[in-house]
Amino acid sequence: MIKKALYGLGAVALLLGLWGFYTRLFVGERDVNYGSYVPWGLWVAMYLFFAGISTGAYMIATLDYLFEVQLFRGTGRFALWGALVTMPAALMTIGMDLGHMERIWKVYLQPNFFSLLAQMVWGYSIFLLLTALSLWFATRERRDSPMKVLMAVGLFLSVFLSGGVGALLGINANRAYWHIGLLPAQFPVFSLASGVAFMLIIVGWFGLGSETKRPQLLWVLSLLSVVLGLVKVYFLWVDFSQSLYSGIPDNVKAVQLVLFGPYAWAFWGLQIALGTIAPILVLVQPRLAKNGLWAGLMGVLILVGFAVARANIVFPALTVPELEGLITAFHGPHLNIDYFPSLLEWSVTLGVVGLATLAYILGLDRLPFLSVKTEVTK
Picture 1 (cartoon, one colour):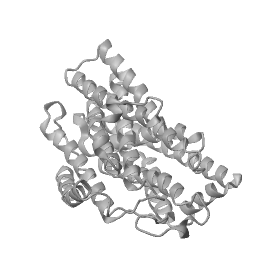
Picture 2 (cartoon, helix red, strand yellow; picture 1 turned 180 degrees about the vertical axis):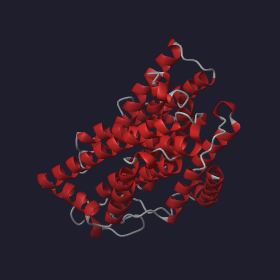
Picture 3 (cartoon, helix red, strand yellow; picture 1 turned 60 degrees about the vertical axis):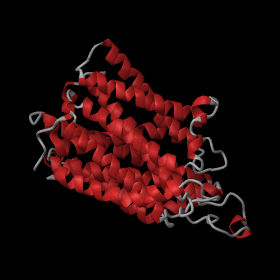
């Protein structure tokens, strides 16, 4: 039942995204709402979101194939498949943000390895290959030394790539909201939390074939989600309190936009209430945490919260003018400081979400090493 619903939702999302794919690829960026003053929008936020799930899922897979935690035995290949599906989704969304997608070859054939962007592109490429190779080893039940070396390298790379995303934002010294040392340190934690939430959905809704250990596995994943959720709240408090007390005008304005401005409804309603408080209240209760439907639903809410959190990291910093009078100095398309995603941006995002959803559950149904026969009904 759940899988059928996901097939339907994924198909609808993909259909809604076809118009966006066509428009972006054959018309261009005419109908987007980002521009010269706000150069990064929803697609950059979604790139951070999907990349976080991918690297976080890989971290979870190491519990099975590297650290051999007995409770997680048999879950690694499902996590690796999730990492392999969501990383292309991340690259699709950031690819749509590129002004000249046809120049991507330059970063491979003419790279400047002192550029953090080039490091990230090469890192993602190696990570994808490594994830595919890890999954290939997993399908052959390899738990020998080469597999452990592979997973160890992948674990290091997943942490590096997660932190690198934070560094990519943090090195922008002209954006006080991002220019804090804590930002690169937060992202690996966010990625791990995203990976745990992803596994809550997979274990909760599809069971992964072992009904005997599923309640205990869900309980451990739930506790991990609660702890990581509290750590996330702590990071928020540290970040916002330091920003407000420091009194740096651009930083204070950005935080005020999140707390009391146009992004407040998303922050308080989606990121905090639905994405943090509700999952914590449900997942600390063993009876609900061990229930597959509830656990999977809380995993979805946590991921929604992280998607909004990524947007609240990207948007507010860019909607604070870098120069006084900039807003009134020039007028024209894409010269607006107030940003909210356009229909085109939503359409492409829905299409990518639909593609990733369909790819994952098609893998569960069609790939022999992922066949699941224990979908949860209660």
